[in-house]
Image (cartoon, rainbow, N blue to C red; front, side, top):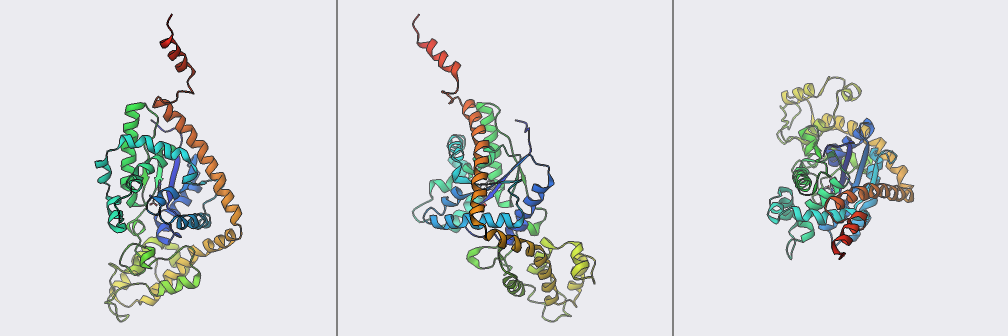
Length: 365
Ligand code: TRP
């Protein structure tokens, strides 16, 4: 079906505080999209039901992290007057839609999902793969389509989910009639943003590896983490030529730095290319580069820290924002689900002519 409105839906699992990888990978973009005025509706979901698919034995972790993620959203500039922030498990329409979609996806199709495969390898469930976890890509298709989302800003790892969503949409519309909208994925702008490495430079930021910089880190913690960042082990003296490949400080600069930052913090260069050229040639020390990066990160995160501190004093209000966001999400959800039920011919009680038809069929006249 052709979309009538431009709608965004995206979300995160509440399994921990959000880090700056989330920030460059999607949060920053969401705030820009929100403020662009180009979208008719924006929904951001705290995916607690999805988080439970691999944390079902640790419900308190999910319960405690709802507010952490909500605080992270509000502090980066998600504005509850423009964006509905809601909690997945409180929208039962999502569960119902998931159940109907399960008929449209084969077990074999789910087994091919590369993101799920990687997660299964990392997670190593003893006692076998929980069915709920195995099926979460279907539930994610329901998340997106219940809101008739046209745009889904997410990281690259979510690509397989969107491919599956579009398959489900086409299949549903073909079998039952034109109801659902095919969404488009919106990926981060550059490679550094797509997969920001941890401070150790080894792999993606991950809580268990202890290589994250959190949005909620203090200026002091940030300084310590930036100063201990992995750079170029061959760059022993300042005069030595430096290498950019795998140099975490430069990867972060790729993700964060803008030309205006040079004017403000390092006027000896015009842009990152000039700075990189000097580093590669030799004569630019890692300490100087780290200090520059720290200045940039502080300028980005200071307003975020301030907003967080403000919201931390207003926790009941944050829960109220979630409650209202969830109410708005349900309203949209009920509407789509009504159309789905009608298309699937299971709206028995809504359709008075249907009951009339049935009466005719059974009346012996
Ligand atoms: N899978 C996403 C993650 O790992 C969270 C999520 C759940 C999501 N449902 C979604 C993202 C729908 C975008 C759209 O963080």
